[in-house]
Amino acid sequence: MRAALESAGCRYTQQRAAVFEHLSQVHTHPSAEEVYLAVRQSLDRISLATVYKALEALVEVGLANKLTYGDDAARYEYRESEHYHLRDVATGEVHDLATPFDPDLLKKLDPRLAERLAAAGFQVTGYRLEVLGRFQS
Ligand SMILES: [Zn+2]
Image (cartoon, rainbow, N blue to C red; front, side, top):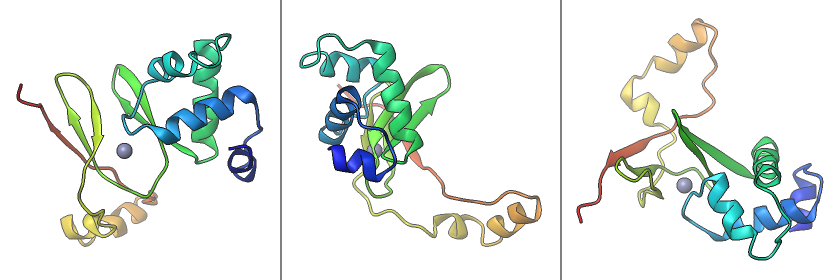
């Protein structure tokens, strides 16, 4: 845990390590508050603000992804390989989509898109795809 944080350029603290460990073990894309409630079980003096700062530090060094949804609370995930998401619009739950990631999908949508954006001064660095829906109960 310590080596992973430090090799990514993230200063090691016990709190950051606990937040990172939790994030790397769950597949639920938790909010900062959910991470806080889980990590508090073992570090009872940790605050929500500390958890939030730890998550932001992990995002900054590339160990975590932050998924934002307008006014809803941001969700975080351990940064694994690129993948798509499925989001339940009723509950806000986010799951990984079990389908291969296609690095050329933008090209398939529009073969000249990246070129046109580059001409407008925008360099494409990636894309996100999220399938929206709701689980039938
Ligand atoms: Zn994910």
